[in-house]
Amino acid sequence: MSAFGENLRKYRIQAGYRSAKAFAEDLGISITQYRNYETKGSEPKFNMLIKMADKLGITVDTLLGHAKTVSKDDWLLTIQKALKDRDLEIVNQSDTDIMIRIPTLNLTASLPKNILENILQTAREHAVDDQIYNDILKELKDTILAYALTTKMEALPPKAKKTLEKFGYVNSK
Image 1 (cartoon, one colour):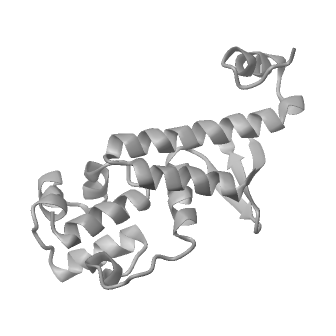
Image 2: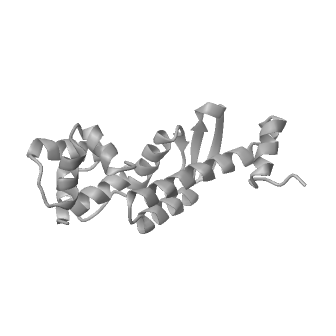
């Protein structure tokens, strides 16, 4: 794998794309062509480089490996993309907390930033392939839902409380 291919894969995953196929579709190219860029050493034309960098939220220089530092807030962009893909959204943030809205439940909860940072760091360190990364991000959603629901127990209908209890998220005894 070329340095460009490694960077492409790394930043695709950081941007929250679940798979190479999803990113290829977003770029409007075949999965075969995309895989050639990521694993076979093929190099895209400049206009495709620009499109890739734009979709990944990075510069072409960064994608090509000319930038040494990654923005401190990259993790937040990754979390935003991951949450959006899972029907959750960040509505506000402070230095210590992030306010997340769950539209399907009409529920908002505040989560400590360090919890989200730790989950994302774990995802980056242990995601040897797309499936593992997706599993970790699914776990992120489950963690957020469980945390949000358990901090709002008094607002939940009895049936929801019983379901949370059944799956071990809360213990009312």
